Amino acid sequence: MANTDAIVGWKTITFGCHVMEPGNSVNFRTGDWRSQRPVLDKEKCIKCGMCWIFCPDMAYTQTEEGYFEADMEYCKGCGICAHECPKDAIEMVTEEG
Amino acid sequence: MAKRVGIEVSIAIAEAAKLARSEVIPAYPITPQTHIVEHLSEFVASGELDAEFIPVESEHAAMSCCCGSSAAGARTFTSSSSQGLSLMSEILYIPSTMRLPIVMVVANRALSAPISIWNDHQDIMVQRDIGWIQTFAENGQEAFDLTLHAFRVAEDRRVSLPMIVNIDGFTLSHVIEPIEILSQEEVDGYLPPFKPRYKLDPKKPITMGPVGIPEVYTEAKMAHSEAIKASKRVIIKAWQEFADMFGRQYNPVETYRCEDADVMLVTMGSISETAMTAVDKMREAGQQVGLVRIRLWRPFPSQEFRRAAGKAKVLAVIDRCLPPGAVCGPVGAELRSLFYKVPGSPKIFSFVAGLGGRDVTVERFEEIVDKARAYAKKRPRELFEVIGVREK
Image (tube, rainbow over all chains, first blue to last red; front, side, top):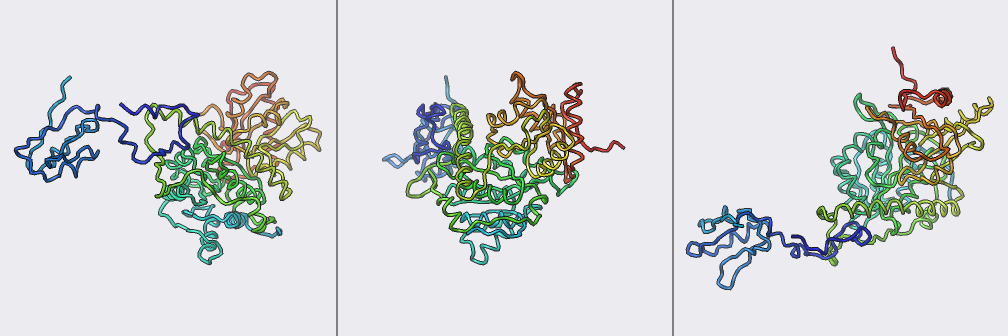
């Protein structure tokens, strides 16, 4: 789950437990908490980007075709995108296995 | 040159914070700390001190503000007391593990209920384990000196920890004493500008105060714990340099007439002065009594205390804090742990005295010594006793 770089001893832990590298949360792959995943229906999607705006983990990025896709390494399956989608184009599907 | 003036101890502490060139002072007034921050706000308003005085809406905000300003690299001072200190509690644990060298003077006062504005040590004993370095002053001069020492130690890059100077509310804070106020040149010579190891800087962004997952939290706390233990050397060295420069020597533990003493009183703070008078009186009457005073409370100076008091037969510890339902008062418990199963170590009895502004008189100290002697012969049922309490 978490980046194992953070697993250090008390002698080598950063001063004051500061994080010295800005934006390094991208190294923490937290998607395995997910119990549901968002599945997009491209027929309904109008590429408005509401999912991208509301995603609390910035898991969404825009594809070359203009659709928005959540990166499953970071998506926690909270369902906010599905809730906010004005076209009900996103369905939350239970993860199996 | 330093000059000796008759001055209220609170004002002397405000002078110390000014002479230290404090840059940010977030503070909320509370009796008996009020005069300290009131005078600092006047210094800032009049332009005598080039600092931000932030009149916050609560002590919780005061300490939050202190964390922010210290993290941004500003020399930060505040002061509090009693209920206000308790309101800070949630935040107090944060700057210590984050290694932010805030300096705070605490004018020690009782905690409600019943409401009491008067002096004891219950407010600070609640905060015993916040991980700040803590000293206790005995008199006004010491309060002034320890405030300067606190900046010097806290900001030392080997230490980088917040520090509290405890002064007894009213007994010190509101008393006018002759105090030698050091000159700006003298203080500048002792206290270099604050150069933090890390600070919040948009040009070089870092994150302070992140989540510590279970794989990290213990190591972060251990690093803090070892840092405060290691700070003792710097604390002592900074006192030594203070003595070299200004002639007043401070030690983690002080002794008074302890040579050949079989019973030693153990105190912290201003009651030690009365205790010395009591020791003189008992010595005149032929009793082998001495006094050990703890100046450095955290990190606890274990070696120094053992050296100072290890040869006593009996330690009569005065706790200015009543811990309901506990085995023993906090100072008594500390010393019992220190001497546990040490061969030939003294018998330790804890006496709770001086709560909520009640004076601890010479006669009370005599009573405590008499009781400690008696308990050394016949062990009492309880490990602490409240002194001077009326039954009817």
